[in-house]
Amino acid sequence: MSVAEIVKEMYPEDLFAYASKLTEGEVRVLQNLRKELHERVEPVLIDSYETAALPREEILGAFSAARIMDHPDLFEGREDKWKASELYNLFLYLEMARFDASVATFFTVHGGLGYNTILLGGSPEQIEKYGTLVRTFQGQTCFALTEPDHGSDIASGLATTAERRGDKWILNGEKRWIGGAKTADFIPVFARDTEDGKIKCFMVQGGSPGLSVENVEHKISLRLVNNGHITLKDVEVDDADRLVNINGFKDVNRIFIRTRADVAYIAMGIAAGAFNAALELTTTREQFGRKLAGFQLVQEKLSRMQANVVATIAYSARLAEMQEEGQEVMLNSALSKLHNALRMRETVSLAREVCGGNGITTETKVARFFTDAEAIYTYEGTHEINALIVGREITGGIGAFV
Image 1 (cartoon, rainbow, N blue to C red):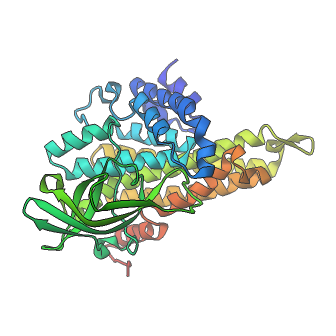
Image 2: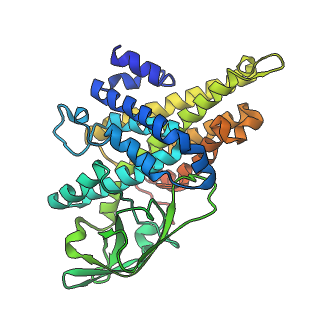
Image 3: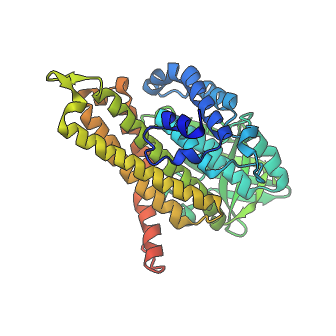
């Protein structure tokens, strides 16, 4: 089978065939990932969701076995040895998120936020050290920026401090909503230098003296992802583990340009997953002597969902193309996240609606997509923050953040 034939079978919701531009090697890796997720993670998925337990070894085992970040096939003809193509990245998130939003989120914390922090913030030596561990899944990382009292206003409000003492830095403060923090082997922690007031980033080793992590409990969304509340009390970090190319919030924004695109892709994947789950139920379940999908009102909703999925893939594909060309600007990422999250939210609502009472049970998959969509709608920039970023650009620089 050709690439076009394989991806048409893998992604029937991709009606405009953007996946046909993937290479044979990229498709093979995606096929292997699907197989690994099905064999390793699917058997424990529902129980993990209901108990809010992260199946860490199963998820990392699937990622590692498929070599989703370092397989040689992903780098054929590429000069960049650290990042695969952005189109592959798009369909990697589609593959994960249409399977489960928590799996995709766990990856984007590790392979998106954490990894890009290292690539953009680290020296060549730091990239080689930490980047290798991340892409081979020999070490798990995350991204510690948000604080208990500072989320959207983190640029001006970041309160965690870093004080230089000889060849050491002393970190004090708190972080909250940090996905994967409790199990991370090393944590990029953003803190404000007490001397110059600039935001810097430090690689804090898991289990360091003075570092404590407690999971945020009672979540209704992304239940598999253990979000951590981090407390840092006189935590020592070697100067060699300060990422040398992060020296202010403008450098943090460079990370967000890439990772906000990743979250736009996750929103796309959730929309696709919810649509496929709704399509499966409505074409198999009968009411009033006929398939649910045989009713006009249901078909209208299915068509709207399909249109939303195509729109989110189209937004994502063009964004991926521009990112690959080096056109990495916040406007593009913010606009795509804003659009895709809106279309995702509508799609999961319609999917739950056409499934009736079955739409609130985990048996039909729709319920997970429905609840998980709320977290994706909010994280990596709320709808309002992304709207204000776009608004500032289209009005010629008129800021309306405060």
